[in-house]
Each structure stands twice: as C-alpha cells, then as structure tokens.
Amino acid sequence: MDGVDEGWKGEVAPNPHPVQVEQKGKEIAVPEEHDSMDVMEEDNKRHLNVVFIGHVDAGKSTIGGQILFLSNQVDDRTIQKYEKEAKDKSRESWYMAYIMDTNEEERVKGITVEVGRAHFETETTRFTILDAPGHKSYVPNMISGASQADIGVLVISARKGEFETGYEKGGQTREHVQLAKTLGVSKLLVVVNKMDDPTVNWSKERYDEIESKMIPFLKSSGYNVKKDVQFLPISGLLGVNMKTKLDRNICPWWNGSCLFEALDAIEGPPRDPKGPFRMPIIDKFKDMGTVVMGKVESGSICESESLIVMPNKASVKVLAIFIDDNRVKRAGPGENLRVRLSGIEEEDILSGFVLSSIAKPIVAVTEFIAQLVFLESLDNAIFTAGYKAVLHIHSVVEECEIVELLQQIDPKTRKPMKKKVLFVKNGAIVVCRIQVNNLICIEKFSDFAQLGRFTLRTEGKTVAVGKVTDLPSIGRA
Ligand code: GTP
Ligand code: MG
Image 1: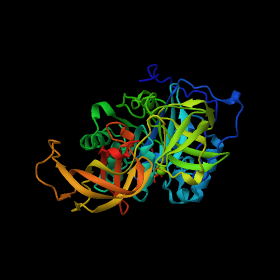
Image 2: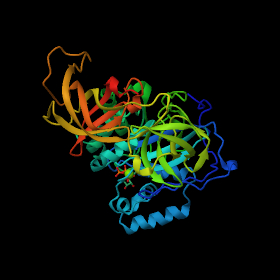
Image 3: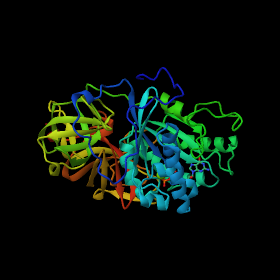
Image 4: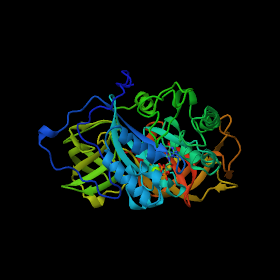
C-alpha cells in the first residue's frame, strides 16, 4: 500500500486548489496555458477513484454532498440556498443531494441521471468521487462510472422496506454489485445508510440483518468478504460516522471505523507505472488542439512524448497533461487526465479509442474469445449462436454477435463440460466467440484486467458479464 500507513489524521488536508463538483452536461474547460512555474510538482499522495453505487434513493448523492460539506468545500450559504430550492420543489430532505445532482432534471425528479464527479482529499489520498445513478433506466451511466473506479462504496438504505426492494431480484443492489465486480471494482465498502431514520434508529438488529443477508450474496458475486469487503453504519443526511467516529450516545454498539477512516485505509489495486501506456478515451473536445479525456490504466505519460491513438494508428504528440485543473509534467496509472494532443483532429477520435504506447501498442480486433456468465436475474432466457447484444468494454460501446458457443463451464467445479453446447440458459457460464463490426481495442483479461472485462446489454438490461480470454493473432501489431 503506498503511503497510507500513517493512518487517518482526522483532518482534511488544506486544499491548495479549491475543488468543485463538475457541472454536468457542460464542456469542461481546460485552463489556459500556464507558465512553467504553474506546472504542479507531483505530490506524494496516492489517487483513488471511488464509485458510489446502489439502489435508487439509497442516499449516494446525499453522502457525496455530505463528504464535500464535511471537507469544507461547500459553505453554509450554499447549503441554505439548496435547502430553499429543495423545499420549493417539495423535496426538503434532498438539499445535500443537490450538491452532487446539478441538473435541473435531477433536482426536480430527485434522482441522479449522469455520473456526478467531485474531488476531496485526506492526509494521504486524493479521491475522485463518481456518484452513479441508481435508477434502472440509467444502468449504462452506472457502468461508465464503475469502469473508471478503483474501489466502490455500495450504499444500502436501512429504512424499513428500502433494503428489501433494493435486494430483491431485479433490484439495483444486486445488479450494481455484479457489474462492479466484473468491471474491476475489487474492493467494496458497504455503507448501511439512513441509520437515523425513525424506522431504524441505529438498531443493531437491523444492521446485523442487512449484513447477514448481504454477505452470502457478495460471496456469490465473487467478492472475498473477509479481505475485500468492509461494512459500516452511517447517516449520510446528518453526516454521522462519516468524518468523525460514532458518538456512543447515538450508537453504543459500533466500535469500528468511520467512513473517512475506512476510505483512507483501503488498499487500491496494484498498478504498474512502468507497463505499456494505455488510456481509453472517454471524451474529446477542441481547445487549442485536440483534448482527450480518460483514465490511465497502465504505464505513465510525459509531456512532449510521442504516442499512438488506436485503432486508427494516428501518431500524436503530448502537448500538455492536466489532472483536475492542474497542469502536470507526467502522470501515472489510475489518474483521470485531460491530455492535449497534436497530430490528430478531434473528429478523428471516437470514445473507446485508446491512447497507447508506440513500442507496445494495444491490439485492434473485430473478434475475440471470451468467458461469459449469463445473469441469473433473466427469467427463462435461452442463448444460442447468433445472439446479438451491445458490448460495453472499458469506454467502448459496440454492437456484437455471439457467433459460436465453444464450451460450457460447470459453475460448481469451474471445469469445462464435455458435452457439445448448442444453447445455454440464464445462470450458465460459457466460452464463446464474439464478433463486432468495427475494430475495437481490447486486451486479454489476464494481461490488463481493466481492458479485458465487459458486459453485454440488450433492451436496457444487462444480460451477461464476461472476460476476454483470447485474441486473434492477426490483431497484434
Ligand atoms: P439516485 O441517484 O436516484 O439513485 O438516489 P441516491 O442514492 O443518490 O439518493 P439521494 O441521495 O438522492 O437520496 C434519496 C433520499 O434519501 C433523499 O430524500 C435523502 O434525503 C434521503 N436520505 C439519504 N441519506 C439519508 C440518511 O442518512 N437518512 C435519512 N433519513 N434519509 C436519507
Ligand atoms: Mg443520486
């Protein structure tokens, strides 16, 4: 673990650059060219992207807003303004969520639509918060948030009836956990929220009930509950057990961490700053050149370096690199960047393209072999060769077809079954060949997990999650 051994100091570090929630739906401006004096020296803090997931109304945006408030990024006047605005919309308790939900539509309906993004830091870590929508209509947005994340905070409402709805078949507590695991979110903090609610009142029985129901489900979704999952009770609305430990007068039975401590101590995924450079492009715009946005999944990038944009093999030069609003000379894996490039026009880039090292570029393929798990939540579904769906892999969204089922895997033994496979039902694990119409840049899961895990969706539902197990050799450069 890099630099977290000192533990949480109970104070949010003074922030040299006041941080704001990025306004949704607006183009994010890259700051003017700075003097070299302004180029930030790298700090020693690690950086973690945290996605907040969970069923609609669990309190994700409220917690995100409260984090910003507790880290002194939102003043009392703004809170009062939001309180009034929320009241005018008959959504009194929603004022904290308004810090993250910046669109009028989101505020009127009281639901998050687009992934909200904000920043805060502790003594040892710079966090990017990704506030995912919980509503089932916006699962694709949740997927895009989770695919940028290193760790996840799964928010569960303890309010009577709300935990139950989220946990039911078809509830987003389940769907989000399965998606997060497939998308590479290897560690989860499970926050049991709304503990202040009159139906809960910090009840240990309710907390234990939720924990005991969640543990077997988290295990079956692939999480090692002892190593990778931690539970804690909070009230996002009142900000209890978030920055400071729980007061014994409020809750006598909790001796564990508060949210900030738990976030500070969580271990991020291993990263290789010396690996071949890979940055999937999630967005692009024109600003004194072509600017691309994305998260570095492997390797490092330096100013004036030459790189290649794949799959169109365009040679580019790095003019400037920005982390948040700060210009930096170099950046390593895990960072969310905006990179200004020369040598390519904005029109020639699509989201899903990958900024890549020249010496070891990413491969471009129209076909790959994958291991797929068809989700159990689909009732009575049958899958055969010829099945079409939409493939979501890192920032790629592309229509695909399962052209051949190769082998079925026994879910219990995880070994291949001998029988020839012509069709499979929901819940099955199968190795298959998948084709797409356009060249896409992906990797084998075993080489670059983040670029080799994917979901298949159709008609607004996730049908399968999978990983790339083999690529045709013709795709290699
Ligand atoms: P989506 O983005 O639509 O998925 O919802 P969300 O998870 O972001 O929930 P949001 O923060 O919008 O909160 C939903 C409702 O729950 C609001 O009315 C909040 O005030 C309420 N709420 C959130 N946290 C708490 C809490 O700790 N206690 C209580 N009593 N209510 C809470
Ligand atoms: Mg929300």
